[in-house]
Image (cartoon, rainbow, N blue to C red; front, side, top):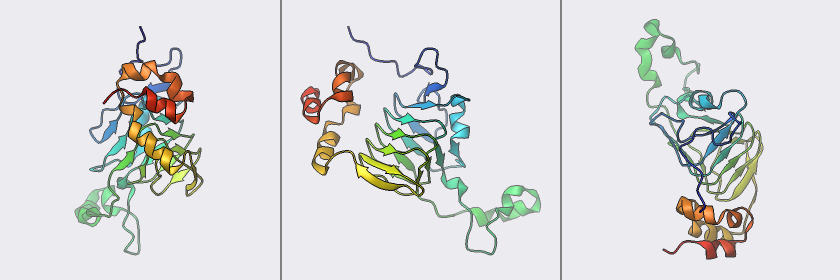
Length: 213
């Protein structure tokens, strides 16, 4: 009998404490991570919420789908990093305390780009950075060192600073087929039966393997 991997195990790879599944790790109500998405870091992967999700003062959310792979040093910059730019100084005086705190109204209502949303089955290379409010489509690949400043389409491959679309992994027609199959929503037991098709099969084979609706 085939048994799916356990999405509740913090360290899924025996002898590799550098790898953590994010869903059982994350505690913040402002971070939502799907099952099986993982982060790899030789220093302290369990510090993901504080070291890799920066300036997260809310209320915007970080949403990461299922089956995402995050390389070492991937960082999400949240809207709390915003500073005023309409006056002579960008320095956030009220945050430093003292009587400066009386002017906290100057920091409210700063423009924001909303939630940061990552689709399913996204692969992030080493030290990629995602800016606030970016939406990354399903099946995308984010190159190492990329600074993602704008939305990434489904199955797009981006790289550079700022990141630009290098190409898409499939044609528009095939991307539509993959999105329709939505294998990441299959039951874990069904995924287990078709791992080889998922990793090395054709789209035709993937469609044929889909569970009945």
